[in-house]
Image (cartoon, rainbow, N blue to C red; front, side, top):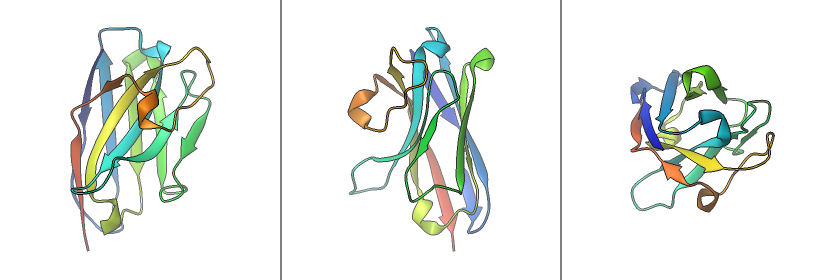
Amino acid sequence: VQLQASGGGLVQAGGSLRLSCTTSGRTFSNYAMGWFRQTPGKEREFVAAISRSGGSTYYADSVKDRFTISKNNAKNTVYLLMNSLNPEDTAVYYCAAGIVSSWHGVLSNDYEYDYWGQGTQVTVSS
């Protein structure tokens, strides 16, 4: 499975960005999907997750009510809409796909994911 993330960039505090992650190689609906982020010198941090069905989502407390994860199984794409961005959201954002049997389960730990995209830089200026 190959994952291609896009949509990162430079935005002012309070602004919005939408990240996209398109997969290829296997049946997209077989995977639970997630977004993580990482800044230099820090461990990778969970951001958001969505189930195979798209009906279940889970967020880190730091982004809850500001970020929205969604997916389009027909387009093999998962999205992360980020609103009310602040400088603390600056990071490289990674999408990930995890093999999971449950149609409604979400994965919040990086070791649960099997495939990773290359990352897209998000920079929020104050």
